[in-house]
Image (cartoon, rainbow, N blue to C red; front, side, top):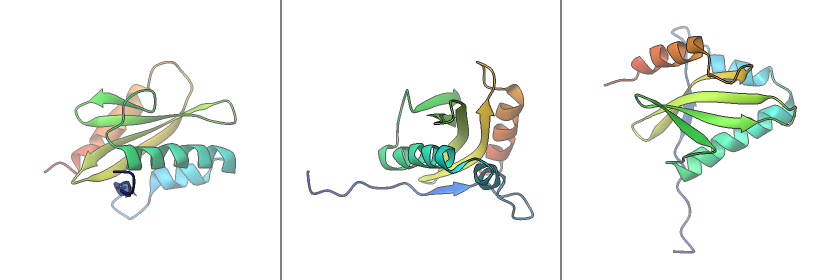
Length: 117
């Protein structure tokens, strides 16, 4: 229906046990143009979920990545999972190699386990 308002899945950032939002802090450290590009891609995921390539890629076991080409010429990834109709952003990083670093995948999967039923 043309008059239907698209639904938006809420997104939350992972919080440490002391309340720190490490991914949000990482985003704040980027320049404004890069931050806006990542935010726009995250918003696209929120309004279009489920989304496939080229914006999102499944990494297995319920872990996904948002793929962003930044205005600065770099490539960013945010790793997330979806639980109870909420996107949980677990990790964010600038890609320096072709392959997603194992330490980023391990960290995101460890954080994701905190949200398993």
